[in-house]
Length: 77
Image 1 (cartoon, rainbow, N blue to C red):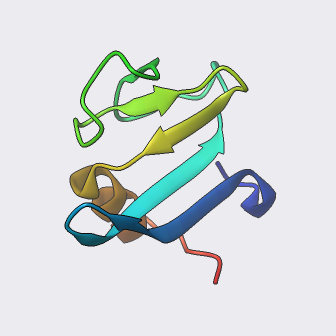
Image 2 (tube, rainbow, N blue to C red; image 1 turned 90 degrees about the horizontal axis):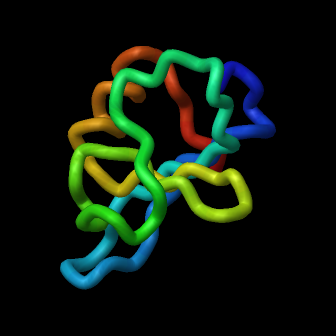
Image 3 (cartoon, one colour; image 1 turned 30 degrees about the horizontal axis):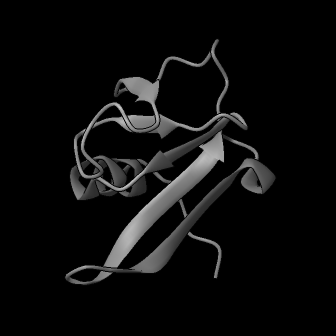
């Protein structure tokens, strides 16, 4: 996730207003600090990354995103 071209943090309009959405290209060899599960197998806001069929991971859990931001992840605006 060190390559800025491979990750994107953005606001999205959710059911309850605006929410964070992180997406990045999955790298199986990278030691993620949260589980990555196939898209649709867990709730949208569970503390997991959701792996889509195109190899993109989507994270909607604010706790995960907050930890990553505190660790140095920056949003592209």
